[in-house]
Length: 616
Image (cartoon, rainbow, N blue to C red; front, side):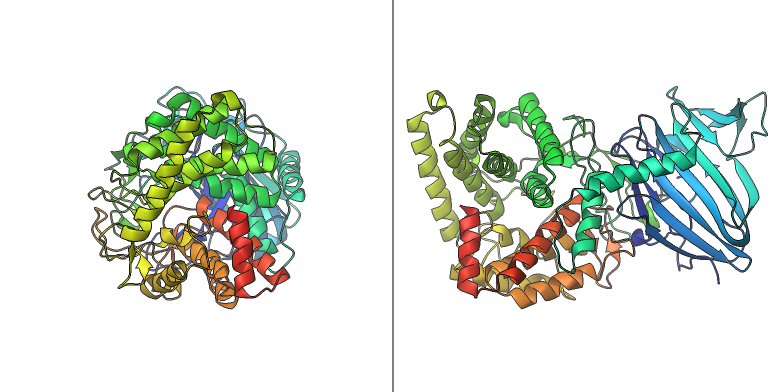
């Protein structure tokens, strides 16, 4: 027996469990240490950030004293995490969750299962990313209360309130024994005490998640559990007050250990819109889709298509200034640690198509006439696409090198015009300008012709990352799915095969050639979303067996809890921010696509016809 062993003091990224109250999130290491928690929002300054600095970050640890063996799982169809500790003297279980009620609280309920176990609890609060001094705690009516520098308070319950009178700095620490049949609870509340009855709070948390999961439409095959976990993770990453879905729960978990590709993903990207709505539609979750679309509408009303950013805060905030936290050492020495994201001010033409495609998908499902407000937004997107598509941009991968003529950006401008022309059929006739729509048709055809002429390299046999480049890019695997090109077109098939050949490493896909100028030094891991795009593309060209094999390979790299980050290292180690919404969204879409291919084992040409019909 022994505690989790590691050659470095940081747990693997995949060792963390994910908790959520649909407003904020926490990560719990396999040793019972809460090492990431931000309140009151996903993008708020952290309360605990030990995942980014073992000394300064802060943590809330409950674990046995001495040797132990740990295992964990989520309780049925929920985001309530149970960790079981086995020691020579006994066994205990710890259930962790974020309270799903009106108050925000981290709840931890311990149950004695066998024998007796001595445990130690340490609540080392380091607010504001550990920038200031640890707060002082004062006893008030049985609670330990700490006032933060911004005037807000934390309420800690479960520790013996031994401190009285003056506030005392430090981390409340306590050792105690739990015997078989006994229970012990701890609760850290934000701005007000958490629930006093943790048994009732636990039941309510399970009822909340179970009720939500019970209405999911899931595939019937072997991927049902993976889709369920992905759906619960996606729900957990949605900010309930507005409907926004954050890209991930964390900031600055590295894309390569020791590298500088460390970014804040606690915001919502417009490029994810169409895929997100498609996944929610497949799951049968109209409420979440409506909430997410309401958030998109909020963004559009505030910004307009003329000043549309690629990402926003969960409350619709446009200003997300990027800063570096020099006092934090970073995950396994990966610096800088960043908060905010400068990509918000980049020029990325693909956003126009992604938002237009999301509106089209939503309208196709809704089947009601397009209201004037939505049509005016679509018209603005089309006008900007028609005006800007000939200019270079930073591309969907947010490169920080020189702007280029990215093929995927041109394709998405084509999508913006194509979806606008489709939606014009349902728009209020008095708002339709036939001369303008005729102009859009001409520009749509011009984009299509130019991409086929300048974006496809006959010598390589593939669409390239940008005009004149010899680099390949996984984003081009979406061309057929978007309806830009037929999956039966030999140029698309060749692109899929060349991309697989050039970008695959150990059975997983890079997002683009490492020789591409992206403004950063060093290499990165394989992008799980790109590997899943390859699965979809292979299905579209009829390579069903290979698609299924690659999908199973991806699943084999999930954490023991079924969670995924953004990237995978060559040895399969998870890299990047965690858990990653887009990865789980693509997993959902792929699972349903594979189920359809299994249910309708048609030959390649028929599968291509199905894909083309869906694109239309």
